[in-house]
Length: 355
Image 1 (tube, rainbow, N blue to C red):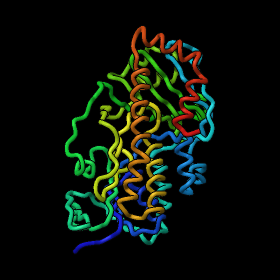
Image 2 (cartoon, one colour; image 1 turned 90 degrees about the horizontal axis):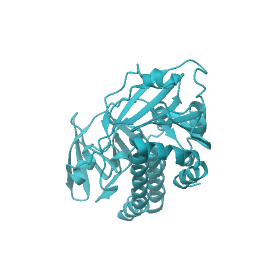
Image 3 (tube, rainbow, N blue to C red; image 1 turned 120 degrees about the vertical axis):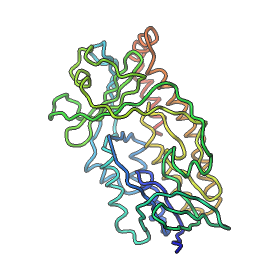
Image 4 (tube, helix red, strand yellow; image 1 turned 180 degrees about the vertical axis):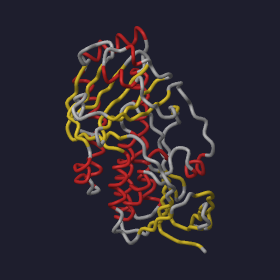
């Protein structure tokens, strides 16, 4: 038996839920094929993320559960005072699980949505349709496929095959630690620690927890630093490290397939734009669908709108990541320059945020 729909969304994470939402809002029949997904850690929601979520009617729910951020503190473990502090507005942090639940709740009243808890194992094209086979035996047919299943998902592989990824010998280490209320006075701040060959971002998520993302080739000996929060990391239970892989630019569309989020553009984590650019993808995809319908013109406009911007932001993120992980003399010079460059750094970020 074949199940037919206008749109099939592949991927059980935030990008999958977001894609299902925009096509339901655009009044299309949607099948969302979602496998079980575990949500770990948090997400930063800078102003461009919030602007997109507001356009989808979700900002009021973000306000209810997310942590408002008022400042980004740039800090060195060798210095007692901050290198610089940037005041920010309309900036939040949230756990991935809480954000996913907001998206899931927003989908509950759409009768045009069918959810299949499965994974896609096979693609093929028949005339003007794509036919997909799930691991639970469903045969699903649709006019348009949305790949939201990540950089190693079947949708991206169908378009590009096995990719050769460049690894710059840095890894992402993640952990979450519980803290007491007001223990570190970090409720409304993001702390960016930059050391000798490593950098670490710490920010609050729900229920007195701090989300920590460390970018380094090895985990530093945090006991060596005269700071209580860094000392606490010496006993942290770090997650399995993920390599930072780089690809040659974003890929958005192929025939009647559109990619969104990490499927389109695996993102280095250095400027908190991975999720933000997924939200911007969704708004572009939504607005072009409303204007052109499920047509090749919609896909072409979506790809043209997003490709150049995302490519430039990936390049910026790579550049910033290299600077943040300077060692020895370069590290010392970097820190000195940051002390006197607050307005320039903020202007740079505001340009990325579209302010």
